[in-house]
Length: 168
Image (cartoon, rainbow, N blue to C red):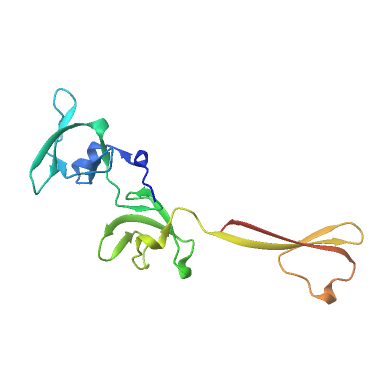
């Protein structure tokens, strides 16, 4: 799946100062800001690589907030609301608060197990609905969720079953 770098969130000095991960416009990681004050040209000195000690000067327009992970090729950040694909929780919302590479994604919902990236989607679950429309001999219409039993069909001229999908 291709990664769309235009979906990366813009650089936010407050988040960066609080230790949120940074990257450049191509998604390559930036380790951290060296200072929270830009130079006279509006550029920040940054650590590109903590191990190699590489330092670079980057303007705010070239920095982005690094996502925690990707779901369906789109970046996911703290506070994003995703939906569960786990059968027992299908369609329930999950608000992302962090990620742990060993245990999966941390969500703020209480009493739920930690889920994995593969258990999440951006799309809310769709539910199948079915209703029956009954046209009486006198022309009046009735809509019921349940199909009537044969003994209840007296006086009904026509029955139509409608099916559709919608958000649950």
